[in-house]
Length: 335
Image (cartoon, one colour):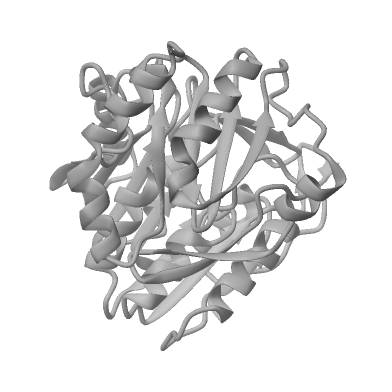
């Protein structure tokens, strides 16, 4: 018997209650196997609608492992797609047959908490169009969004924004630098019956948030002309969702979740209405949650804002943790 099989069986047993709940909530996208915790480091197996998405991030699957996975999940009747991302840049490196590639690139629709999203197992980018560990964050946004204005920063394909609009938000703005991601976000909005259609703003984070927060973005900085950017009126939002990548650099500034989260948090906080909510995410495993929270509180005080209440949002049970210290940290701050 394959050494992987008992690990897959144990993962199934751990998810019985959660998957029953998710199916009742009209959700067909979730993690079936989280290898870093469940026994095969670097292997993830996700269900996205009728697709079984298998990904490796450290070492490729052996033929035996691959066949074990296919056999184990065959009763689900899903289309299996394997993306090997074990190279240093995490890009998909394995070729598929022509037939497999056509199936992997097939446009599909998946559902989460009654919200529909576009999905393709392979597309021009690398990452899936919906990050499943962020479901707990989207769930919390849906519980809070009714009647509120919502700002979704580093929006990617607009999952949080569409979820907020579906839950009755009065106004939603998705901000992301990549037009390709926002094109998917607009498509996601069209998949759903929404009272308000999210506004998608293609912009570098820094000029967008500096304008929204009232700080303003200069066209010249230290004698250097800045690239063109979309003009935005200053406004504050009832709920702000901040989910930056680990590291990114542009002429406008540097995104660095380890060394300078406050550079992102402070202007985002200034765009949050008094008495509002900001939900911050940090996906760097080595960042200590408690130290990060204290940094956020100090940063808030420096701009004259008080953190009144704190609520941690943990990923759901398909993303288990040895010690409760999830790599993805989400904290909701009442400010």
